[in-house]
Length: 116
Image (cartoon, rainbow, N blue to C red; front, top):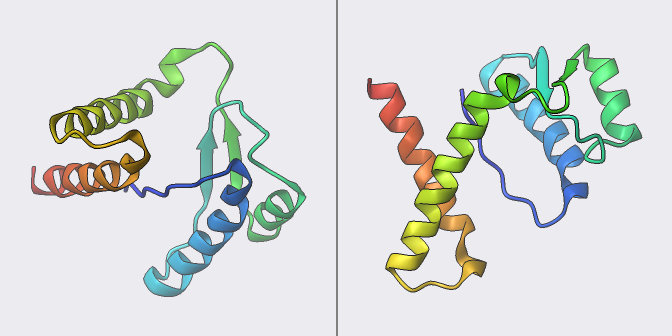
């Protein structure tokens, strides 16, 4: 399953993740069991850490400079970003509008992967 969120600041991640976990629990009756992230720990704060501990969410950090662990996600992200740049260029849009085409392409990628 793929979800996409846009943030203006890294500090928004913790509260958005907590809202996301709560939403999936209530809307889909599904518990988030595990999250995997690259070695960047500056996204997470005390609130995030205590929430994960309380909910029993296992946090896995990938090893630094081991591209094999992140290869699939990195390919997906770079592909979506390249497509977004192409749309912005094609329609002469400024970079500040990159979020909407990115989310549109993410939705299309999800729908396409569900059909195949």
